[in-house]
Image (cartoon, rainbow, N blue to C red):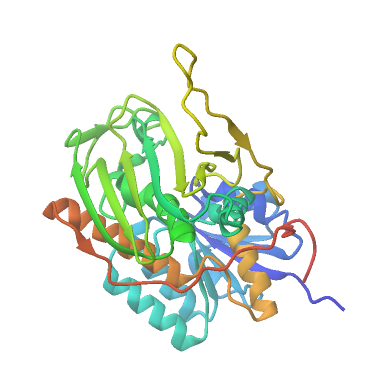
Length: 377
């Protein structure tokens, strides 16, 4: 006889809660029971929009006895504080990235969870989508040989182009590195393993930015962190990567992830998405004779698995809790990614290579037949 679905609550009813609620409320193995926010009217509105039965304060979500996992969708500066409160209430945590904004409090959070026998899952769960999971299987099958190096790029004008209150995205704990870096670093760690050392150069294109949409349009806010970083990464098990993170670029180029191995180059989907086109390019057998053009075929490879969206990491946590197995997007991975991103900030400030002190074990994968919409609990 199947057990009942696992109860889920959300804290934080801001912009990203739509993406979570749209998916979490469709997974049969989960039941979203409550939405909480310091602005209770905002929580009520989101609960009504997605058919969630209860809403109210943060304390109401924490005190709900039917909730097993709480999803922390607050701003980065309070991620640790809110996650600690969730653990203190005896509930498991899924937190938006990053896990925290400094090493000391984030390590304390991990120790707290371990001592309490509770789990922490850390976004991004895009790496659990069929795009990244298929790419990982392709590499593990040896289709591009031994991975040698990667190139990634994220560049555009910045989130003030669409976000009604973007100042926090340029504050400590954010910027293009800590806001978008978790997607790219998580993807690279899944492929190459833990990061050993990083080097970086950074700059601020402007000391202030201006809100462009919404009620605050026209207001200026400070840029507290580098808005462009050029990064080099070395991995413990060999290989390296070159990455660009910028919100100073007129050229819009998102989601570039190219993995070159001894037998070819794999182009994988944007790590901020759950799926997309996957291609492999093989080495040339001979150079064409001029004036014949040099043509390289990008061979498209099939994507395996069901495509959903944000919230699949919460589902993996729920299923793994019942099965007694580790979940993939773990606190250990989330901390290593944060440690790497902070080391990049330090490397940019010092204009030197910085060792990354933390590490991770072998990272798990989802099976090719993982179906978020199938009832299993």
